[in-house]
Length: 147
Image (cartoon, rainbow, N blue to C red; front, top):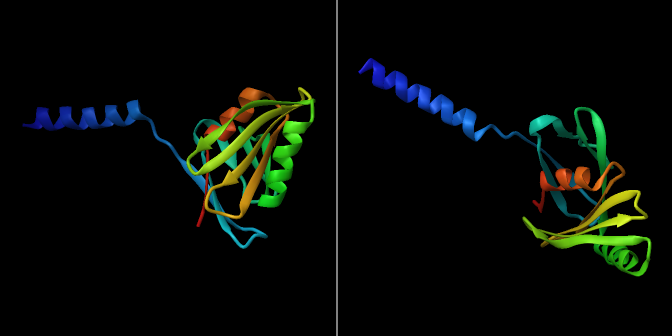
């Protein structure tokens, strides 16, 4: 009986290490549109987010991305600007977890996201001057929703 319990405990511990442990950090912002927006970041592997405005995403204390809130009118202007200017290259666009986004490269120097938070009057700009991969890693760890 003791050996079975011991094996069961070892299996539970082993499954915990195999599946890993994910941690999240979130902040709720009251923005100009009147929306209350929750931004959450999966913080494993040294990633972190602060509660400032603009908010900053870091990995191992290195600043990777900065983000700020805009209204939907400005969202439309940014999307139009990205489409109209030749120095911008659209990398991808789509929907993810209640967010409609446009990811683009500006002048081979910045990798930016323009994000509309569905069911809200709010959008978010996120900029990264490190690399495309760095910007994608940050974005893939983010979720945003209206409270």
